Image 1: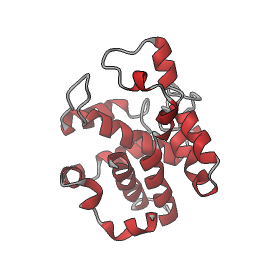
Image 2 (image 1 turned 30 degrees about the vertical axis):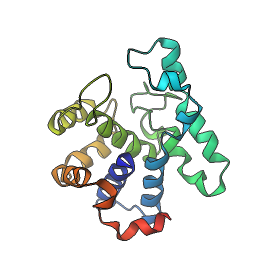
Image 3 (image 1 turned 45 degrees about the horizontal axis):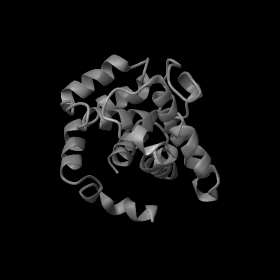
Length: 186
């Protein structure tokens, strides 16, 4: 839910600066919600491992975007969110996965969900590390503009009211966000 909320936040900020239809914002939200669905096809022992992953385990995890995209392609109503699920680990410098896409080869939905997922991961506690502070996470995003993150999307996010977003997340996320549009998601 956090990745979906952050994805929607970013999409709404993008829509304030350039044409982005409400339907596309809905698709971005849904892609954020389902971005890791492919992990159901990954061995539980790999997903729950506390220590460093082996190269084989890393390759196994690296298949989850493709697995998720394959699952969703089979559902007519979900086909439009497949690009966000498939591309949420791509990087604008081409060092991402599963396809090593660069720059504009990565769809907007993928760029947004990738940034949202990264911010969420950095600011969340993991079994192998503590959560970063929001300022530290924002510094990491700044450092990654143009390499890991799309510079335009990243700048829009960094220029938004992150403090307000963080309040929303801390107060319960979706339940405390402007829920007027959430009924549209069913």
